[in-house]
Length: 311
Image 1 (tube, rainbow, N blue to C red):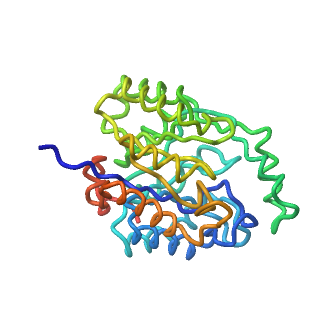
Image 2: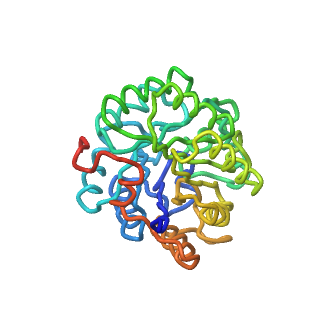
């Protein structure tokens, strides 16, 4: 008899999209990021996806020194898998985006599978004023911004972090074409299974949060990767909970966190990352789905182990 499937919960603690004005609960300082991550792990997240922010004004920062103010604390307090962004934030160079991951040598990093428009500017209409002037500019700049990850960029990340540090990847796929790009790297044996394929819905510039798209992404991933991948689902904003619940029913893993949505329910700001983890965990357990522990997630994704990192 086959073992029961376990669902991996990833929590994306702060990200680089939302700004301090949007929620007083968004983790900004290293202490807040650490506390948010530890709370999420205690609530049941086995993977913690992490960005850093400038403690003074909350803007995204690639500075490894800021990462190092919270990474050791998270490792000390939890057994969760630490997953560091290579996407960074708008306007960062690839070299800047890789600075912290190359220093930290984590078990996992995110890796966007292509260049894309990444529109945050519609959020400008929701706020009359901002706490910091950079916030308005940050959102406006996305009107004329292309997030860059060329084939050469992706190859470089795989070589430096994958081959160089033993880091494995959360392959972020914002559209169908990104699945085919990942299949290209698999065919060239530059990446090895099991692949952790994070399909992302509801970002302006990527695939929309329609149930038909969820099913289509699953079908194409199955066609391209067969039994060589673990599927996970992320949906932006109001789509978060219903969409990832549907994905879990279809056999997927799930991602929550204040990077992806600031809310717990309609009109209700989430007061912590742990609240969102607790909410999806309750939903999954009510569907008779079991939650993967960090140890089980490591086995499912063939990770190197928390004792092999650089922090």
